[in-house]
Image (cartoon, rainbow, N blue to C red; front, side):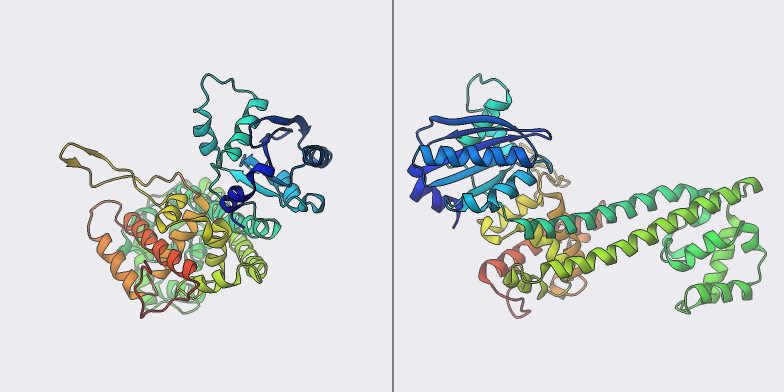
Length: 431
């Protein structure tokens, strides 16, 4: 049952509970529909504290002959997770059909402004949250339980690992430049390797101690080395060897004392990247296992889109929960932060506008990753991306990919709301 439908039918018999959550304590305030305070207390944010809160809520419901309970908490980092999960799944509370909501702090802060000259204290914060629920301002879906939390933990951890890889690659650029300056600055068409962090490039950077070892090697020796490390995947290994030797010849030379420490640092970075890549594979397997049996219809709708596999579909669903939480594709895009601020004054309107990025960064990441994959698999999206890419001269790829992501949101919203699978014969946006 949606929260709005529940509120319309049962509000006179409902207890509205607001909980202000912190790392150590939970401060609670409970109101009836008339706005009377029926309960206020403070408890530790741990299992015994949660049990004391539960007992107090049950006593309040019984003593006031109330039949239902709505519990609202601010989504405060991860500190609200345990208490939300505990109250939403407790068997004793199930009799009262509990609806537990983790609210966006920004929404509560804006509602707080309607109270004139109110102090900022934990008990008053709990009161504002309870009143926010009482007046029917909650628009999000109830807490989704442990299965969604498990999927969300995995998909967010995957993003954390991806960010670790990105940071490590960014960090090691300075070491690569110090050892092999030309390799770090050459134009794309002059690089011997398409991927500086690939297997063959890693072997060159770590197995040759100095640049002179490359410069004074014969072309035949370099070709044999490159072919072996690249598993014979280079289309023209002789040309690759020549580019590599020229880059080594044109690079700055270092004092001999620096080469070994640089090699050690670069090797360590490559080892870390490989370890992170292996962990991503493990996480991907866990995500595929966790998604089974959860949101089956919506999962099938997403994976029917060419380019969206189990990992991307799981990441999107872990953050969306259910599409019924959103009234339109605009609402979904806003939740993901895929909207742009208007920069306009008089007759002037700026072409370069910033993405808001105020929404769910995890959902935004998975939607953008999905769009990048979808554009490589669906001609309509590839054409749209190329068109947007050619419209500007700066931030071409980022802008085109973000706009393609926004187009993909319309498709995803249409498929999920209609419980359909993707078909190339239908309009791509599914509006």
